[in-house]
Image (cartoon, rainbow, N blue to C red; front, side, top):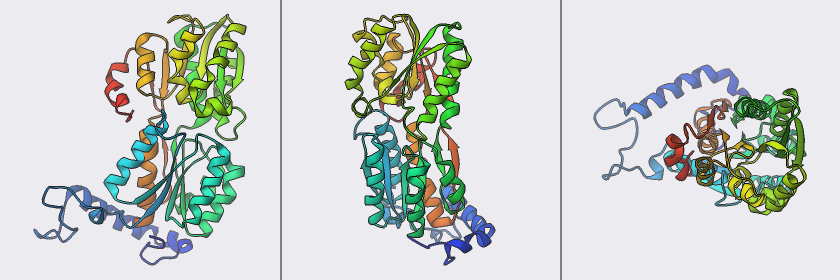
Length: 360
Protein backbone atom coordinates (compact mmCIF):
# COMPACT_ATOMS: atom_id res chain seq x y z
CA UNK A 1 0.00 0.00 0.00
CA UNK A 2 2.66 2.49 -0.99
CA UNK A 3 1.79 6.21 -1.26
CA UNK A 4 -1.68 5.71 0.17
CA UNK A 5 -1.74 8.98 2.09
CA UNK A 6 -4.67 10.46 0.21
CA UNK A 7 -2.43 10.94 -2.81
CA UNK A 8 0.02 13.16 -0.91
CA UNK A 9 3.71 12.64 -1.78
CA UNK A 10 5.84 11.54 1.17
CA UNK A 11 7.83 14.79 1.38
CA UNK A 12 4.64 16.83 1.32
CA UNK A 13 2.90 14.76 3.97
CA UNK A 14 3.87 17.12 6.77
CA UNK A 15 1.87 19.99 5.28
CA UNK A 16 -1.28 17.92 5.50
CA UNK A 17 -0.59 16.28 8.85
CA UNK A 18 -3.28 18.18 10.78
CA UNK A 19 -5.93 17.17 8.29
CA UNK A 20 -4.73 13.59 8.21
CA UNK A 21 -4.76 13.35 11.99
CA UNK A 22 -8.32 14.62 12.11
CA UNK A 23 -9.41 12.10 9.49
CA UNK A 24 -7.52 9.33 11.29
CA UNK A 25 -9.00 10.10 14.69
CA UNK A 26 -12.53 10.15 13.33
CA UNK A 27 -11.92 6.92 11.43
CA UNK A 28 -10.34 5.18 14.43
CA UNK A 29 -13.15 6.27 16.74
CA UNK A 30 -15.67 4.92 14.27
CA UNK A 31 -13.77 1.65 13.99
CA UNK A 32 -13.45 1.21 17.76
CA UNK A 33 -17.02 2.14 18.61
CA UNK A 34 -18.72 0.55 15.62
CA UNK A 35 -20.34 3.93 14.86
CA UNK A 36 -21.82 4.38 11.38
CA UNK A 37 -23.98 6.81 9.56
CA UNK A 38 -27.01 4.56 9.42
CA UNK A 39 -28.19 1.12 10.41
CA UNK A 40 -26.82 -0.43 7.21
CA UNK A 41 -23.22 -0.11 8.41
CA UNK A 42 -21.93 2.26 5.72
CA UNK A 43 -18.79 3.05 7.76
CA UNK A 44 -17.43 -0.42 6.99
CA UNK A 45 -18.38 -3.84 5.75
CA UNK A 46 -20.42 -6.04 8.07
CA UNK A 47 -18.69 -8.94 9.81
CA UNK A 48 -19.36 -12.50 8.78
CA UNK A 49 -22.40 -14.27 10.15
CA UNK A 50 -20.28 -15.97 12.86
CA UNK A 51 -19.08 -12.60 14.14
CA UNK A 52 -15.56 -12.86 12.72
CA UNK A 53 -14.07 -10.64 10.06
CA UNK A 54 -12.26 -11.83 6.98
CA UNK A 55 -8.88 -10.34 6.08
CA UNK A 56 -10.58 -8.11 3.51
CA UNK A 57 -12.70 -6.51 6.24
CA UNK A 58 -9.67 -5.37 8.23
CA UNK A 59 -8.42 -1.83 7.86
CA UNK A 60 -4.77 -2.79 7.20
CA UNK A 61 -5.39 -5.70 4.82
CA UNK A 62 -3.73 -4.01 1.83
CA UNK A 63 -0.37 -3.57 3.59
CA UNK A 64 2.61 -5.93 3.24
CA UNK A 65 5.17 -6.14 6.06
CA UNK A 66 8.51 -7.87 6.69
CA UNK A 67 8.88 -8.62 10.42
CA UNK A 68 11.97 -9.66 12.39
CA UNK A 69 11.21 -11.51 15.67
CA UNK A 70 14.89 -11.65 16.70
CA UNK A 71 16.35 -15.05 17.54
CA UNK A 72 15.58 -18.61 16.48
CA UNK A 73 12.07 -19.76 15.75
CA UNK A 74 10.39 -21.12 18.88
CA UNK A 75 13.05 -19.80 21.29
CA UNK A 76 12.41 -17.75 24.46
CA UNK A 77 11.72 -14.03 23.99
CA UNK A 78 11.70 -14.43 20.21
CA UNK A 79 8.52 -16.45 20.50
CA UNK A 80 6.86 -13.70 22.55
CA UNK A 81 7.75 -11.10 19.91
CA UNK A 82 6.52 -13.45 17.20
CA UNK A 83 3.25 -14.03 19.08
CA UNK A 84 2.77 -10.27 19.22
CA UNK A 85 3.41 -9.99 15.50
CA UNK A 86 0.95 -12.79 14.78
CA UNK A 87 -1.75 -11.27 17.00
CA UNK A 88 -1.43 -7.92 15.23
CA UNK A 89 -1.46 -9.67 11.85
CA UNK A 90 -4.69 -11.41 12.83
CA UNK A 91 -6.29 -8.29 14.31
CA UNK A 92 -5.34 -5.78 11.61
CA UNK A 93 -5.05 -7.90 8.48
CA UNK A 94 -1.67 -7.09 6.85
CA UNK A 95 0.31 -9.69 4.93
CA UNK A 96 3.41 -10.42 7.07
CA UNK A 97 6.59 -12.33 6.18
CA UNK A 98 8.90 -13.39 9.04
CA UNK A 99 12.70 -13.50 9.23
CA UNK A 100 14.45 -15.34 12.10
CA UNK A 101 18.12 -14.51 12.63
CA UNK A 102 19.33 -16.39 15.76
CA UNK A 103 20.33 -12.91 17.06
CA UNK A 104 23.18 -12.82 14.53
CA UNK A 105 23.75 -9.23 13.44
CA UNK A 106 25.27 -10.18 10.09
CA UNK A 107 22.22 -12.30 9.38
CA UNK A 108 19.95 -9.40 10.30
CA UNK A 109 21.71 -7.15 7.80
CA UNK A 110 21.57 -9.79 5.05
CA UNK A 111 17.89 -10.47 5.74
CA UNK A 112 17.14 -6.74 5.64
CA UNK A 113 18.44 -6.67 2.06
CA UNK A 114 16.55 -9.85 1.22
CA UNK A 115 13.30 -8.47 2.59
CA UNK A 116 13.72 -5.08 0.93
CA UNK A 117 14.21 -6.74 -2.46
CA UNK A 118 10.64 -8.05 -2.14
CA UNK A 119 9.36 -4.43 -1.97
CA UNK A 120 7.20 -4.56 1.18
CA UNK A 121 5.24 -1.53 2.34
CA UNK A 122 6.90 -1.68 5.77
CA UNK A 123 9.59 -3.47 7.75
CA UNK A 124 9.80 -4.04 11.50
CA UNK A 125 13.48 -4.70 12.22
CA UNK A 126 15.70 -5.40 15.21
CA UNK A 127 18.20 -2.60 15.83
CA UNK A 128 21.04 -4.85 17.03
CA UNK A 129 23.50 -4.09 14.21
CA UNK A 130 23.53 -0.41 15.29
CA UNK A 131 23.18 2.89 13.45
CA UNK A 132 26.40 2.57 11.46
CA UNK A 133 25.32 -0.69 9.85
CA UNK A 134 21.58 -0.08 9.64
CA UNK A 135 21.16 3.57 8.72
CA UNK A 136 22.36 3.28 5.09
CA UNK A 137 19.97 0.37 4.62
CA UNK A 138 17.12 2.31 6.19
CA UNK A 139 17.85 5.29 3.95
CA UNK A 140 17.78 2.92 0.98
CA UNK A 141 14.44 1.56 2.15
CA UNK A 142 12.88 5.00 2.37
CA UNK A 143 14.23 5.87 -1.07
CA UNK A 144 12.35 2.78 -2.26
CA UNK A 145 9.22 4.03 -0.43
CA UNK A 146 9.38 1.28 2.18
CA UNK A 147 8.68 2.35 5.76
CA UNK A 148 10.91 1.01 8.54
CA UNK A 149 10.28 0.84 12.28
CA UNK A 150 12.67 -0.49 14.95
CA UNK A 151 12.33 -3.05 17.75
CA UNK A 152 14.28 -3.95 20.92
CA UNK A 153 17.47 -1.93 20.29
CA UNK A 154 17.30 1.79 19.59
CA UNK A 155 18.71 3.41 16.47
CA UNK A 156 18.68 7.06 17.59
CA UNK A 157 20.20 8.50 14.41
CA UNK A 158 17.72 6.67 12.21
CA UNK A 159 14.89 7.79 14.48
CA UNK A 160 15.98 11.41 14.17
CA UNK A 161 16.18 11.14 10.39
CA UNK A 162 12.94 9.30 9.67
CA UNK A 163 10.51 9.71 12.60
CA UNK A 164 8.26 11.97 10.53
CA UNK A 165 8.04 9.20 7.93
CA UNK A 166 6.88 6.54 10.38
CA UNK A 167 10.10 5.22 11.93
CA UNK A 168 9.31 4.54 15.58
CA UNK A 169 10.80 2.46 18.37
CA UNK A 170 9.23 -0.17 20.61
CA UNK A 171 11.38 -1.61 23.39
CA UNK A 172 13.51 -0.62 26.35
CA UNK A 173 15.79 2.42 26.45
CA UNK A 174 18.73 0.06 26.65
CA UNK A 175 21.32 1.86 28.76
CA UNK A 176 18.72 3.07 31.24
CA UNK A 177 17.15 -0.39 31.54
CA UNK A 178 20.52 -2.02 32.22
CA UNK A 179 21.50 0.51 34.83
CA UNK A 180 18.09 0.30 36.49
CA UNK A 181 18.41 -3.47 36.82
CA UNK A 182 21.91 -3.21 38.34
CA UNK A 183 20.76 -0.60 40.86
CA UNK A 184 17.71 -2.66 41.80
CA UNK A 185 19.81 -5.81 42.23
CA UNK A 186 22.26 -4.01 44.52
CA UNK A 187 19.49 -2.55 46.64
CA UNK A 188 17.47 -5.76 46.95
CA UNK A 189 20.46 -8.05 47.53
CA UNK A 190 22.16 -5.78 50.04
CA UNK A 191 25.48 -6.13 48.19
CA UNK A 192 28.29 -3.99 49.58
CA UNK A 193 31.13 -2.14 47.88
CA UNK A 194 34.00 -4.49 47.06
CA UNK A 195 31.81 -7.51 46.36
CA UNK A 196 31.86 -9.14 42.93
CA UNK A 197 29.14 -9.06 40.28
CA UNK A 198 29.32 -11.37 37.26
CA UNK A 199 27.85 -9.73 34.15
CA UNK A 200 27.30 -11.93 31.09
CA UNK A 201 26.43 -9.62 28.24
CA UNK A 202 26.94 -8.19 24.76
CA UNK A 203 29.23 -5.19 25.13
CA UNK A 204 30.79 -5.88 21.73
CA UNK A 205 27.53 -5.23 19.86
CA UNK A 206 26.92 -1.65 18.77
CA UNK A 207 23.60 -0.39 20.10
CA UNK A 208 22.61 -3.63 21.81
CA UNK A 209 25.70 -3.37 24.00
CA UNK A 210 24.36 -0.21 25.62
CA UNK A 211 22.19 -2.27 27.95
CA UNK A 212 25.18 -4.29 29.11
CA UNK A 213 27.16 -1.07 29.56
CA UNK A 214 24.36 0.27 31.76
CA UNK A 215 24.57 -2.86 33.94
CA UNK A 216 28.36 -2.68 34.27
CA UNK A 217 28.39 1.03 35.07
CA UNK A 218 25.52 0.64 37.53
CA UNK A 219 27.52 -1.93 39.49
CA UNK A 220 30.75 0.05 39.26
CA UNK A 221 29.04 3.18 40.58
CA UNK A 222 27.83 1.11 43.54
CA UNK A 223 31.45 0.10 44.23
CA UNK A 224 31.18 -3.52 43.07
CA UNK A 225 33.94 -5.31 41.17
CA UNK A 226 32.60 -6.49 37.81
CA UNK A 227 33.60 -9.84 36.34
CA UNK A 228 32.59 -9.55 32.70
CA UNK A 229 32.02 -12.29 30.10
CA UNK A 230 30.94 -11.67 26.51
CA UNK A 231 28.13 -13.92 25.24
CA UNK A 232 29.64 -15.95 22.41
CA UNK A 233 27.69 -16.55 19.16
CA UNK A 234 26.87 -20.18 20.02
CA UNK A 235 25.35 -19.19 23.38
CA UNK A 236 23.61 -16.23 21.78
CA UNK A 237 21.80 -18.67 19.49
CA UNK A 238 21.33 -21.49 22.04
CA UNK A 239 21.50 -20.61 25.72
CA UNK A 240 22.19 -24.21 26.78
CA UNK A 241 25.53 -24.00 24.96
CA UNK A 242 26.72 -21.47 27.55
CA UNK A 243 26.57 -23.86 30.51
CA UNK A 244 30.34 -24.64 30.47
CA UNK A 245 31.12 -20.93 30.28
CA UNK A 246 28.96 -20.17 33.31
CA UNK A 247 30.41 -22.98 35.40
CA UNK A 248 33.94 -21.89 34.47
CA UNK A 249 33.37 -18.29 35.52
CA UNK A 250 31.83 -19.33 38.84
CA UNK A 251 34.66 -21.80 39.51
CA UNK A 252 37.19 -19.03 38.91
CA UNK A 253 35.21 -16.54 41.02
CA UNK A 254 33.55 -18.44 43.89
CA UNK A 255 33.04 -15.19 45.81
CA UNK A 256 30.62 -13.69 43.23
CA UNK A 257 27.55 -12.37 45.04
CA UNK A 258 25.44 -11.13 42.10
CA UNK A 259 24.96 -12.61 38.61
CA UNK A 260 23.25 -10.76 35.76
CA UNK A 261 22.55 -12.40 32.41
CA UNK A 262 21.87 -9.70 29.82
CA UNK A 263 19.86 -11.92 27.49
CA UNK A 264 16.34 -13.28 27.86
CA UNK A 265 17.20 -16.81 26.79
CA UNK A 266 20.17 -16.96 29.17
CA UNK A 267 18.04 -15.65 32.01
CA UNK A 268 15.46 -18.37 31.36
CA UNK A 269 18.30 -20.90 31.71
CA UNK A 270 19.32 -19.61 35.17
CA UNK A 271 18.35 -22.79 37.04
CA UNK A 272 20.31 -24.99 34.63
CA UNK A 273 23.40 -22.78 34.94
CA UNK A 274 23.23 -22.57 38.73
CA UNK A 275 22.69 -26.29 39.19
CA UNK A 276 25.58 -27.14 36.87
CA UNK A 277 27.84 -24.79 38.85
CA UNK A 278 26.83 -26.38 42.15
CA UNK A 279 24.91 -23.33 43.35
CA UNK A 280 21.87 -23.68 45.58
CA UNK A 281 19.01 -21.15 45.65
CA UNK A 282 20.26 -18.04 47.45
CA UNK A 283 23.99 -18.71 46.99
CA UNK A 284 24.08 -15.77 44.56
CA UNK A 285 21.57 -13.06 43.77
CA UNK A 286 20.61 -13.90 40.17
CA UNK A 287 18.99 -11.23 37.97
CA UNK A 288 18.25 -10.84 34.28
CA UNK A 289 15.78 -9.90 31.59
CA UNK A 290 12.43 -11.07 30.31
CA UNK A 291 9.79 -13.60 31.25
CA UNK A 292 9.01 -17.05 29.94
CA UNK A 293 7.88 -20.39 31.36
CA UNK A 294 11.40 -21.44 32.38
CA UNK A 295 12.05 -17.99 33.86
CA UNK A 296 8.91 -18.29 35.98
CA UNK A 297 10.00 -21.75 37.14
CA UNK A 298 13.45 -20.42 38.11
CA UNK A 299 11.90 -17.58 40.13
CA UNK A 300 9.49 -19.94 41.90
CA UNK A 301 12.30 -22.39 42.73
CA UNK A 302 14.47 -19.60 44.17
CA UNK A 303 17.33 -19.84 41.65
CA UNK A 304 16.36 -16.56 39.92
CA UNK A 305 15.63 -13.51 42.04
CA UNK A 306 14.74 -10.63 39.74
CA UNK A 307 13.89 -9.88 36.10
CA UNK A 308 13.03 -6.67 34.33
CA UNK A 309 10.10 -7.36 32.02
CA UNK A 310 10.48 -5.86 28.53
CA UNK A 311 7.02 -7.12 27.54
CA UNK A 312 8.26 -8.54 24.23
CA UNK A 313 4.73 -9.33 23.04
CA UNK A 314 4.27 -5.57 22.72
CA UNK A 315 7.53 -5.39 20.76
CA UNK A 316 5.78 -7.50 18.14
CA UNK A 317 2.25 -6.13 18.26
CA UNK A 318 2.96 -2.41 18.35
CA UNK A 319 5.40 -2.21 15.39
CA UNK A 320 2.79 -3.85 13.15
CA UNK A 321 0.26 -1.32 14.42
CA UNK A 322 2.82 1.47 13.83
CA UNK A 323 3.30 0.47 10.20
CA UNK A 324 -0.43 0.16 9.63
CA UNK A 325 -1.09 3.58 11.19
CA UNK A 326 1.54 5.19 8.99
CA UNK A 327 0.59 3.40 5.79
CA UNK A 328 -3.14 3.97 6.13
CA UNK A 329 -3.38 7.25 8.03
CA UNK A 330 0.03 8.92 7.67
CA UNK A 331 0.96 8.93 11.36
CA UNK A 332 4.57 9.63 12.29
CA UNK A 333 6.77 7.33 14.38
CA UNK A 334 5.87 6.44 17.96
CA UNK A 335 8.42 5.84 20.74
CA UNK A 336 7.23 3.25 23.28
CA UNK A 337 9.25 2.15 26.34
CA UNK A 338 8.07 -1.36 27.19
CA UNK A 339 10.42 -2.05 30.12
CA UNK A 340 8.51 -0.58 33.01
CA UNK A 341 8.26 -3.34 35.61
CA UNK A 342 10.22 -5.83 37.72
CA UNK A 343 9.12 -9.38 38.47
CA UNK A 344 10.23 -11.38 41.50
CA UNK A 345 8.85 -13.99 43.87
CA UNK A 346 6.31 -11.52 45.25
CA UNK A 347 4.45 -10.90 41.99
CA UNK A 348 5.38 -13.83 39.71
CA UNK A 349 2.11 -15.66 40.39
CA UNK A 350 0.18 -12.79 38.81
CA UNK A 351 2.04 -12.94 35.48
CA UNK A 352 2.67 -16.70 35.41
CA UNK A 353 -0.40 -17.67 33.31
CA UNK A 354 0.47 -15.12 30.62
CA UNK A 355 4.15 -16.09 30.71
CA UNK A 356 3.22 -19.71 30.07
CA UNK A 357 1.17 -18.58 27.07
CA UNK A 358 4.25 -16.63 25.88
CA UNK A 359 2.40 -13.34 26.02
CA UNK A 360 4.31 -11.89 29.02
